[in-house]
Image 1 (cartoon, rainbow, N blue to C red):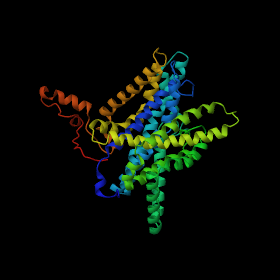
Image 2: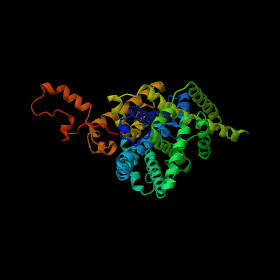
Image 3: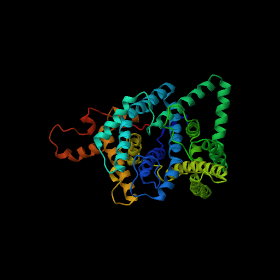
Length: 433
């Protein structure tokens, strides 16, 4: 089935859910870092820690961004062929480049302020105004550190990878024979990956080779420089490209993400092996440390590919149907991930000395971050120019609109009938990606 046909225009609800899951998992991932039993240089360390957090951080970090890049590649190919190259490029610049630049200038000082206040909290004192002042003073150091040192690095890599895919596609298009041959090879390769039982081990070998060149065991976070981190660029670019090519034959997505007993067993084994081998990272003098690290890299790569595939399969199994709640959260998830990190850090500082178990704190921080971000999204983003920038168009508010609808029967004359009318909007809902 060629996905360039009009029949492919229906909305894939389960992939909306997958995209939201990948980004929301990132919020919980960052919220958990203050509860690690070993200080890793995070803004603050809580008085309550748990060894199980180390395993959660290891596992969740191995696949959440890879899952996001695969889905991003899938949707990018959909938009490219539906709207054309020119519209696609302009939309990527608006929806990725603008949030990257504007978000960095606004959020990085707030993140730095969290680090300043976190350091103060370790000494038993927190000065919010001083922390904010110190954070915004870092803008005076520009251009040193420009666009680095925040969680928005994924937008920079998304721009880089998109540009590389378009450049390769344009170069192949200069020679029709090369283009058609490359397309056939790509379709054959993607079909083999989706169908073969040996695909995960085969894909894990080159992935493990990239992991070997990371500065630490597992995936590096490439947020230190605008100079591309080549191993990370290859891994994320590989998942994006795979997602791009999967959209050419949508039926292969179901084969790639199918749920079987053997696949689940392989996933569990790779997760267990990775966690077991990760303990040797603290023993660099071990006589077999090279062999152990190689085994860890391969197991980590297997865990990465299996969790990506099975996550999609689970959402396909249980959420492959229209849902207003899922669609709303999917629309909001981009904003939630952009805005979450300062909120998470400030809440971690507020909770750090409280005499509660880490699990209760982690749940509270995660839920409060999501709740605050959702309220901000509904009030100030969804139906505004910011929402149009992030989601492609303005959409009706839900929380405020619901409240106004509840009041409408007894409302005084002239009260707007919907939240959108409050801001002069009249947007008809459309089924769009």
